[in-house]
Length: 154
Image (cartoon, rainbow, N blue to C red; front, top):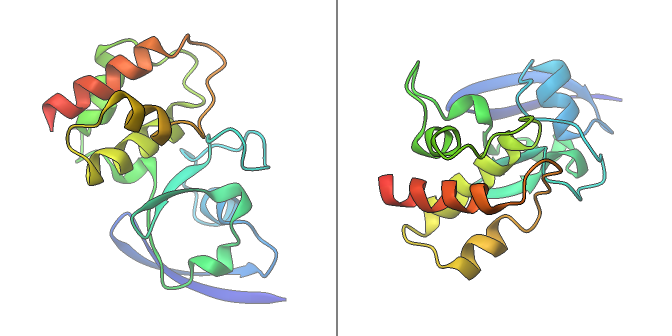
């Protein structure tokens, strides 16, 4: 059964059809062509598919697209202002926290959501905010450095 989903993505109103069983991740990537949100585990365990949904980070792979009807969503594509990267994106580059890059969009979205609600996060708040994100390439130290640098820049 096909349904129409009307939502706001990265500040733009969007309306498109999807099957009732379509995940938000599939809707974003396949229907709307937002390829920055990554498919990895498809079980909500790794965080590569993280988007900001009504102000909170969620795993889009385990959320139905139908649940996004009327929601406000921010993807990695919505952070930069033209050629100017968001401070979190720039901090990841400046600290070398980007390795293969596959997990990076999910991390950046999780960090943005953290810094939207807490300007000077503690180590515990940082750990909690990214606890749902997995990186297989780094030792996480550079990611924590990037988060702290981004917090200083905001």
